[in-house]
Image (tube, rainbow, N blue to C red; front, side, top):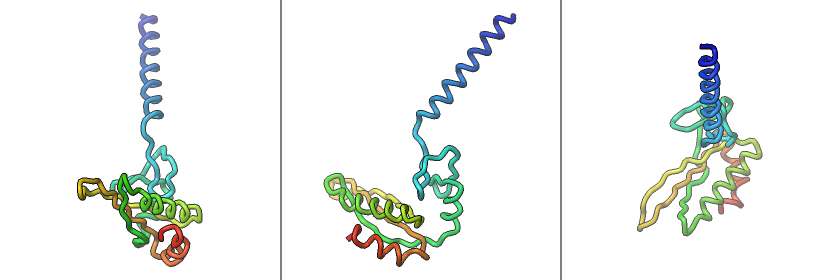
Length: 133
């Protein structure tokens, strides 16, 4: 009886360890704003956030800074939008990219919209101008 309980305990512990290791290896959620890996994501409007940026997202007034299209044949505009986001994030200006897709002329088009807080709009526009033009 004791041997059966010991074997059962070992099996339960092994099963838990396997499940935990699979969770660690699976896809990780990133905060929409800071892109940090999240161990305990908070969700709003279908997006994952860290606790700090969930508050910023929910209570901030967001404004479109730039919108552009990218395709597999012409990805440069999408790359420049991501570079602008990276620059603004490094300067601690919260921003995020909204991505939408459409099928046009037998190609998938990625429509990217860079959103910034309204209070940072003018500064973000000036700082990202050389990247986005």
